Each structure stands twice: as C-alpha cells, then as structure tokens.
Image (cartoon, rainbow, N blue to C red; front, side):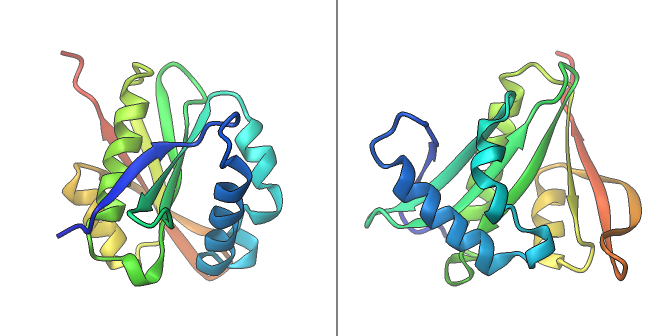
Length: 159
C-alpha cells in the first residue's frame, strides 16, 4: 500500500525548481551507476523539447521518486528514467509515477510507449509487465559490456 505522496510535474518557473532538481540529482547519483546517470547533464535533459519530468513528494515535501519521459515523434514516446528512493520502494510509488508518465505520453496522442530495463531487475520487470508492457527484444551490452537491456513497449489501442 502506498504511503501518502503526490505526483507533480516539474515546472521551470516553480519557486522550488532548484531545490527539487538538486534532490532529484542526488537520487540519480545514488541510484544509477556513473555511466548511466544523467546527473551531469540533468539541466540539459530538462531543456530538451518534447520531454517532461514527473516527481513524487511525500507529506513532508521530500522527493521520493521521479520519472522522465519524452516523445521524439508523433508516433512514439519513451520513459527514459524511473527511480524511487530505496527506502521508499515496494510502496506503490514507482507504479504511480509510471502510470502518470504513461498518461502524460497518452496526451501526446502517441501510439506506443517504450522503455529499456535490465532484465535482472526483477521488480522493475514485474511492474512494467503488470501495466501491460511487453518485451520487444534483448539488446546486448546496452548499459555496459556485461549488462543487457530488454526493450519493452506498451501499445495504445486506436479507439
């Protein structure tokens, strides 16, 4: 069961923008290996057109997770990052962030959302499958020479 938290969209003109980005960058550094982390280029990522960032805060205003997404074309979108603080996992936060990111992508009228995930990340694989994602292919050495990725996708029906 999820503890009380809310998903928000990061707005550049928000008075808390710098503080929120700082917290997300700290999370990014802690969760992802250096070669997978966007910590150094985070501001650049946020400035890209056709992209967005959702973050989740608890009742104390602490950032507990975030999701980045982009829609490089009118046909498809990608979830580029999904991360939840280790101490806050298995509480429904990742699912809430992923659902919110999928919904944001849906508003762009895309036909497909894709993502990449290490097949050894069993909880993440389970979450993606629970929400309807299917494995498209295994990409060898995606993250590093000894770490592969499953490319997964979720198609939206055209109705």
